[in-house]
Length: 466
Image: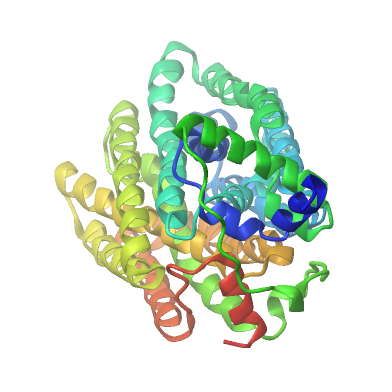
């Protein structure tokens, strides 16, 4: 067989060639690059929660205005998610990741120069558009680059980068905000949060495009070049030849199809989209309360601003080991079971948080909400990356994320300060627990399990209507 014919033959077996790759720094490079993209994005999201107290003072915001402001960037994410998913499925994961980072970093910097509340509101919305381009891509990228039995473990590691960013944000606030007057401190903080703009150039240079995406879009030569480079690097690192790839089942029935807004809502994907959406709504509702309102909840309970930021850092940091354990166990016991266990515990902790009175008990139950609630994301996110075929993976994941962030983030972020202000913390926690209960019901009744299967095996299950 000629070299060209051999390459053409191999390029048709890209999934099996990825499955045979051992774990080396080649895989770690992709995972870390994708994880760092989430890290810098979480700094931007965490910036508002940290700076919310001085912003309220400077612009004299009402509870309704606070709700609008906290929901603004999330609404931008919601608006940007599905278009970004469609563009990613059509033009590539890497390209959209780079442009998303550039856009939201610039808009975060511009937020620092807002002269009034409406201007800040608009810039936060615009920054959200760029975040919408970034959020669904890292786990779509990793799901297409790593072996089937490592996907959720790696996604747990990647998702931990988000929590590291949320953990660092209040610590940066403690470092920056007390050194400036309230009118200036939050502006400096937003300017610092925009520095990761430089990371877009690192992604552009070092992140490879998905060989699965390239092959499916007819770029066999480019797919072969990317994967051959990875294979050569692995063989150089290990000092031994790779095993012969095992042929895998064809996915020809969906070859050549294009993503569209309606694909996730068409048969046989609609059941998957509905179950993933309700699961995402419950998790994002809890997430946004923990990330955005914890400093305000503690300050309204009589604690100093400095103590509130310190408590928030502890609480957000609790999600880091939660995500790592969730990713690890979801790979062994299943995405569905680990989502149910983690969110069930988080829902119970939410009820106790609403009744807590002492600082120690409030922080303890909030840490459990963060550890198990935010910690449920690796199983959730990887499952909805796995529920869709390659040609519509980013679109499907973006659709689910849109539903979760709109109802859990935009609606939840707007309604929660009103509930807290009128009915108190206990009532607010009842609402969160109810959302979690609905999510668990849909997860148990409609969600399919995807543990241990290759993306191509899962795609064939979709084609056969399973």
